[in-house]
Length: 110
Length: 120
Image (tube, rainbow over all chains, first blue to last red):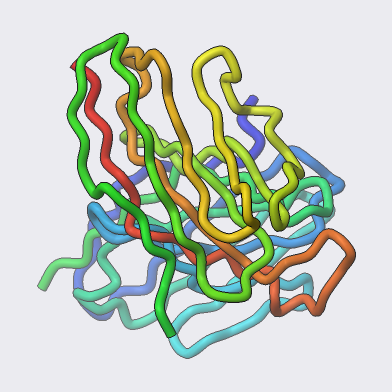
């Protein structure tokens, strides 16, 4: 079993749609979680950290359920510029070692 | 602020040849990471340095891969000899993170543009 699992997609949605991505992780000792965004042929960039209380950054909302070892990302009012691969990430071992999922691809169309 | 620099951006070699990648992290970042990203997969950590010491190299194929960060700043990753399955993007990242513990907002890893390697 992979340490971080994501639905690879692709998710094809129209502009303005709301889309949700889910992710599960296997290491219950993981303390920190993140969503990274990766554009085609570019490097990953931090989108947001994920906290147990849930957190929001504009149109983006991230949730963490430690009991179910489940992380989610909700994107509201999708824009064309949101088209990218979204990587779910869990920290492992306490030394800032990041375990990346394979990513979920999002394509927003007009 | 300058980001993480990597070179070369692209490299094509034949199997059994050697190749080296270079990375210069963000100034002041103690921790440097090398990742391998195979097409369709997420980045996989190969090695993590803090200053010039290795924190984690558990997933580095040591029979063919080596890395060093001699002066605690820039780093090189070498593959010798290369195999077809080494075709991937090699990403370098850096962070302010210290294993002695720092503020949580200093965990962010900043990635360089990567080196795209094709082994024929």
